[in-house]
Amino acid sequence: MEIKQQLRLSQQLVMTPQLQQAIKLLQMSRMELSELVQEELLENPVLEDTLEGRDNREVTAGEVAAEATTIEKQVASDDRAATDDPNKDKKEDIDWERYLENHALQAPMPGGIRRGGDDELPGVDQTLTRAEDLTEHLLFQLRMGDFVDDEQRFGALVVGNLEGSGMLRVDGVAPEDVVPRLAEEAGLHPEDAEEVLAMMQRFDPVGCCARSLEECLLVQVAHFGLDELTRKVVAGHLTNLERRNYNAIARDLGGEVEEIYDVAQVIAELEPRPGRNYVSEEPRYITPDVYVHRVGEEYFVVANDDGMPRLKISGFYRAAMADNPKAKEYIQGKLRSAQWLIRSIDQRRKTIVKVTECIVEKQRDFFDKGIEYLKPMILRDVAESVGMHESTISRVTSNKYVHTPRGLFELKFFFNSAIKRANAADIASESVKQAIKKIVAGEDPKAPFSDQKIVQILRESDIKIARRTVAKYREMLGILSSAKRKQYF
Image 1: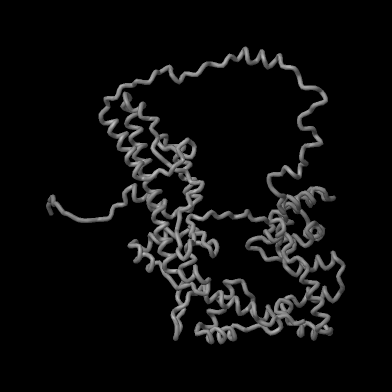
Image 2: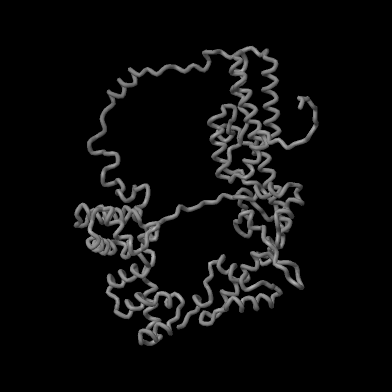
């Protein structure tokens, strides 16, 4: 055992801070990048947004580097004298006494002239910042009801355990044990709890607080005064009703198939999820990262720079670096950080445009003729064409959108697996989905095509896929099975 010193040369990949920042920016969406830039503008005084000033022309990374080099040379020389007058920008102090005196001497407004009377103000319902949700709506009705304290506590527990659909669910508790569990927690007798729950199920919207779909529909049947046949169908034949097996329901209840079909139409008008009208999703607005414009027979890819801050190096802090060593060190650090950010954003922009141009070139038939001509394409195809790694292409296409003459698409949309064809070129899986959608749209509603029949129709177009693949694509498109699509009358 002995200690030795050895010299060894080796190569290894080092993730520098600049490289880490470039990778981070590359996979960001447009909104995330905008938020990051705004944070940097607040934290880094050297950065400046040209949209806020008079210079609105685009600032390139080369100009940024030239500006930064000028500032660095100026710091290195350190021989510039401060020529600005320190009292030049001094503003005159405000004479508050004169201001208050003039304000007090102003004549009051005439009594007949009122700015914005009460009648002109909008109502409270027009100034709400958000809509009333299901919980607030039910708790208001609970407070307005004739309930004692124990019943109020039980009702609050019921409302607190409602799903977005309005159904009463407690994790890990069977539906029949939910009421006893909540009643025990509220200190209420289980029989009284059942009565309170029955009253709450008739709150608006009717059917909320039900423990099952059957109970929810039965509450609505009783509330709307529907006939006994409808109640029997709901109580015992929801499974056959879902499968549209009207013959089995007619045999069991001793009625005609036409009559059962009419009952099914009435039940279809009931609300299986009473609370969904109070669940509102925020609209999702998409701003494309790039545009594809068609001019004549050619397509041009243009980056979307609207609304994005155009960063440049501010020259305001040059004077601050002249005499103060601490300020000089601080601003030099911020200067390097600003350079890295601007160069990374510029590189991100060029990479997205370059990848989109490659996609447009490879999917030219799609842009010319439509989605039926979408070609199968994988990340490796684009990576080899643009000379980048597949992981880089994956980051570029994640959460990025392109506006084309065919519509707005995510860049990931153009990457599809290939479906083999014997006598023709491979077809993209997305094109097969659209073919299935078109076949279902053209079928007879009273005799819908089964998955096996769709396989045979696709085979006539030289598209050979398995029945389970058709079922998978059909579910992805939100298309029901043939048994549930069938219309009997």
